[in-house]
Length: 111
Image (tube, rainbow, N blue to C red):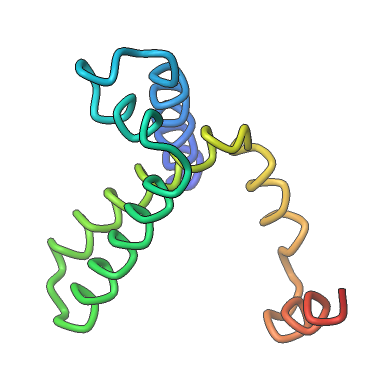
């Protein structure tokens, strides 16, 4: 099943980026991001999101695929930096399964 393969790849990526938290910033781009802190990691995530959105507007299939991979990479770095395990995100998605997006969004605005 594709989603199981996808989550396995994402889990492996998370393990890799988590392992780089203590690496030498001169030896790893990921370690360099951690050394620069949450603000830089967040900035890079935002940049990748914008690049993905632009690729989508331009309807460039391969760029969408590539920018999606970049976005997911930076997202896993952000998760690891914040000590968020992907399982927490998967559980939240599973919790929302079968709930209308409009209903779910309305429940967040009432918090």
